[in-house]
Length: 209
Image (cartoon, rainbow, N blue to C red):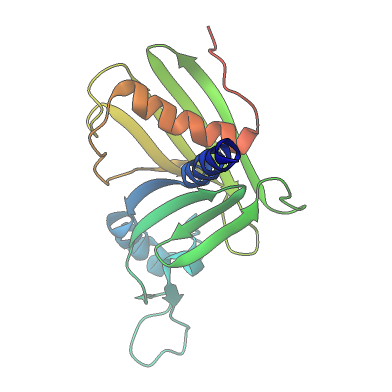
């Protein structure tokens, strides 16, 4: 009887540990301020000018032609242009947030027809990792987002790790993630992103060469 209880307790604590390990978080802090301010001038001067920025996500309102105080197409900022993107995986549930705004909340086993979440490894070896992640929800996002991660076997700090948040197909807008990387090793950091790849692709990552 004691053995049965002991085994049951061991299985319980093991299951608790597995469930805890299933929750993963990935961040990318992007500052749109300078680019949006640059776009503002063109937007006012040229009525045909278009930008790839997602005004709904960024909280930007546009003045109409009968605004009594501001010129037509003037940007009104209702939210911060510094966006803290967070990708969280809890079991099979993936959530993508821009500050407090939820862009995607989807079960990876049942995405539906419109939501797109995918991952593609460009290079994965014992000494490097280059991987792309793609996210799109047409109900909340103007653009399909491409999170691109690229680094080699050296000190894991912002200076040596390329993390880019871009609009797929719009190469003018690939912005660096500016949040500081927590202290870690190359192997740990490589596994950190491989875990996201495996959760999204639902297959084990293999070395490319």
